[in-house]
Image 1: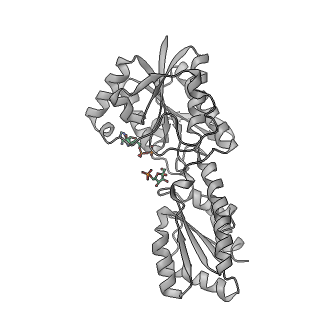
Image 2: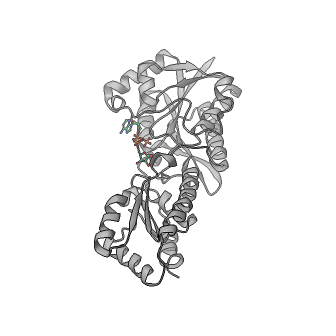
Image 3: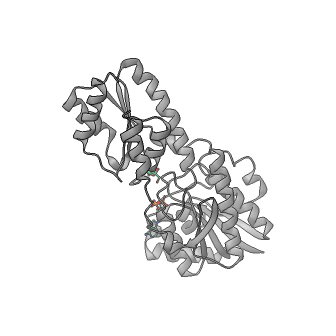
Length: 321
Ligand code: ADP
Ligand code: F6P
């Protein structure tokens, strides 16, 4: 029987399990043996691979993390590591691999595909920083998690008439901050795409106070700086009592929301279909409610378009009037 593999790579994201389940089930339907490759590219190099069966994917769709585990492999970035991975894939008779991960994982996928193992990229990152697709798997869940946390934090900030600055993940992308900030009614959103000088930000918080608004919530993307540094700056320049909060990995774990489960299922299925069609070297995604696929080289490094109108509406209308 023909064999395909599936692996998760880079930062985990809620919904990876839904994608693995879809790859397995569509793979079985297409008469493939599906091999689970553990710990991303590291597991491929080390031969940490085993045949999956139905019980592996039972009751996993709703769970965060990844049953295949994930990793960041420096060794795979070298030509020697890539050659080793290729020879392991050949030794196992793997014809194609579905690679669930972000931009870095796609770079690895392109290399493997060029070496002769067909690969398909499935966008798995909470950051939503892949410009060829409207959404990446896990983004919507992270936004929901942070939105809920904003409301918890607002309760206690309000009780003390404090300002809270919440630093959220996203590497260089401000999407989690923007979306969760709008949904959480943030009084200010700081993102790398539209840098706001800190003196201006501090002045705005002062103005809110003078207007009688004693509690404000600032949502800050990690790409815009450290919440601790911003809090120290505001404290020193204005005397406002401000607390820095870093939810960290709480926003990467947890059960995926329904949207992420559905998207992951659709993308996992399409990835296997592409392998059946003999179309390696592609990335699946979603555009305007349709499932799309593009060459990996068109997906790699494609900067996400940032919604400046929504950002402006939040910071200059919703938060000010
Ligand atoms: P993500 O996929 O979430 O962007 P990383 O950037 O950490 O996460 O990449 C995940 C893994 O993909 C890396 O640890 C490495 O094994 C592989 N990878 C990343 N960049 C490259 C590259 N330029 N060439 C080959 N492999 C890469
Ligand atoms: O890419 C996902 C992500 O969670 C980023 O938002 C964050 O900057 C990074 O991974 C954290 O990586 P690590 O798991 O290595 O701490």
